[in-house]
Image (cartoon, rainbow, N blue to C red; front, side, top):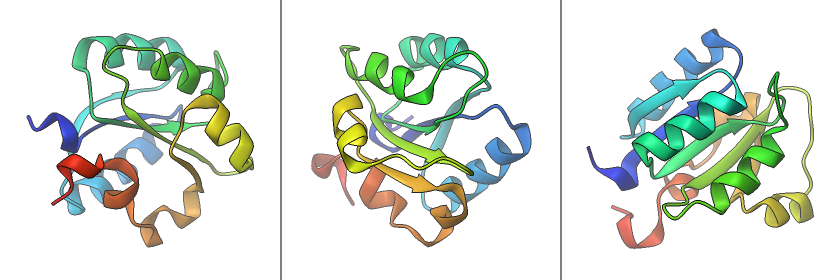
Amino acid sequence: MDVARSVLIVDDEARFRTQAGRLLALRGFQIAGEAGDAAGALRLARELKPGAVLLDVNLPDRSGIEVARALARMPSSPRVLLTSADAEVGSEEVDECGAVAFVPKDELPSRDLVGLLTPLEAAP
C-alpha cells in the first residue's frame, strides 16, 4: 500500500464512511481502514500508519479536534482533514490541532481532496 495515498476514515456513521471511501477511491486513494470512534481511530492510526485521516469533528467518545491533536503528536503523523455535517471549525482551531483544513461533509465531493490529503512530496 502506498502510504502517502492511504486514508483512515473516522466517522460514527457507517453510511458516511462507505460514501467517503467511494469518493476517496475515485480520487486514487486507498482506504487503510475505518473507525467509528476516537479510540478506534487512534488505535488504527498507530497500527496502520496511514498517510491521511478524514476525521469527523463530532465523535461519540471524544472530540475530533482532540483526536487531531493526538494524531499530530504521533511519529508517523498523518495529514488530517476535519469534516462535519453540522459543526463549523475556524482556521485558528484547524491550525492549532494540526489539521490541514476543515471541509463540511456536503462540500467534500467538490473539494480538491488530492491536494488536501496528499503530502507535497508525494503528489502525482
